[in-house]
Amino acid sequence: MTAGDLGADTPPKPGDVKKLRREVFERELERVQLELVKLQDWIKARELKVVVIFEGRDAAGKGGTIKRIVEPLNPRICRVVALGTPTERERTQWYFQRYVPHLPAAGEMALFDRSWYNRAGVEHVMGFCTEDEYRDFLHSVPEFERMLIRSGTILIKYWFSVSDDEQERRFQARLTDRVKRWKLSPMDLESRTRWFDYAKAKDVMFHYTDTVESPWWVVDADDKRRARLNCISHLLTMIPYEEIEPPKLKLPRRQAADPGYARPPIASMRWVPPVY
Image (cartoon, rainbow, N blue to C red):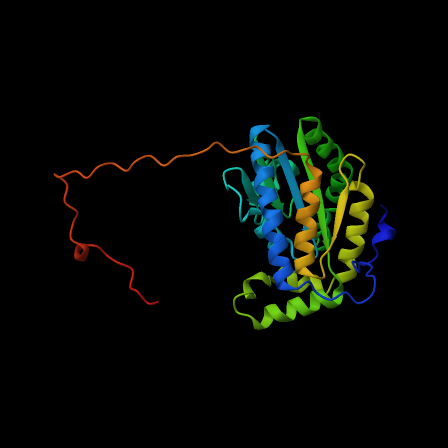
């Protein structure tokens, strides 16, 4: 895949496709989430190390997809990594150093909600790094990822592609919905004024980092429901797994009542008021 194949984040569409119906989405989501549980069991049993990177335009639906992936999984096995602004100390470190502690150990899967690719996107476009730092990153990251892969890490990278019209619609919805307002950061607002700067930065990033060993997989994210199902379905194909029959469990008999124990009075406890 080359930079020119991707254009300005407007994925090709075969006609006017209707959005996926909720009942279809929920039925299919239940099915793929069950498969995610089987994959989780396989990762733990085979002591695999899995890293999944989610990048893309603001409001492209990365967070919603991650939420549906982790929903049925054990948080001790599947972790979400969403780092904030680097500290002053972190800014003086080797660039990849702040990400390394969050890489998975054997039997774990780490989902990066944005990742080291911040340097190729927001840091470059907004001028938070120097041109030399940017260029060094583009040449260093393929080797960094090869090192991870050689060490036994399974690395999967997703780019969520959303059209400018759909992103505009989602931004407008966030402006009016108090529950979603927190998703609209000052950086998101600034990104609107630099739409094509981000498009060019993404194309350059793909040119350098869409490698044979670690390719980018592009998710058409204009329909959130389809994007979530397509991404999860694809993730399930990236790691060959088999169902591991869980051990049969039997609830032990509850301990017999202790005649010498008396519960404290109910009125002595602070109860949550029954508002509902």
